Image (cartoon, rainbow, N blue to C red; front, side, top):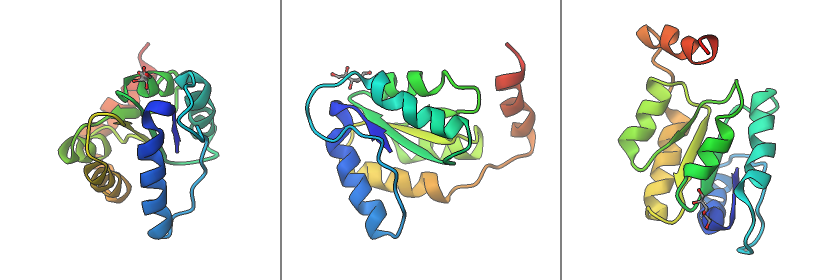
Length: 140
Ligand code: RB5
C-alpha cells in the first residue's frame, strides 16, 4: 500500500481492515498527514510491483489520479483508478489490473473497503481480454 497525505487516512483505514482480515501488508508510506509529493511515495511501490517483489498494490492520493499516473509509467504495472465496486470488478475481470488506485478524498471509506475486497477476490476473465492486455505493453 502507498498514499500521499491526501490518501493517508484512507490508507490507514484500509490497512487496519486488511490486517484484521489476515493479510500481511507492506506499507510504503506516507506515515502522517504532512504534505508530501505523491511521486516520491508511489514510485517505490510501483517499482516493487514492476519487478515482481509484490503482486498486488493499493494506492491512494486525494483524487487517485496522480497515484495512478505514476504507477502506470512501469511496463508491468496495470493500475486502475476506481470510484465504485463495478469499476473495481472490471479492472480485474477485463484489464488484469495489479494495482487499485482510490480517490482518498472522494469516496466513503466503507465503500473503499468493499472495493478492496472485490479487487482481491476477482480473477482475470481471460478469453478475449488476453490479447487486449498483451497489446498494452507490446504496441508502443
Ligand atoms: C494533494 O493535494 C493532491 O494533489 C494529491 O493527493 C492528488 O490528488 C494528486 O493527484
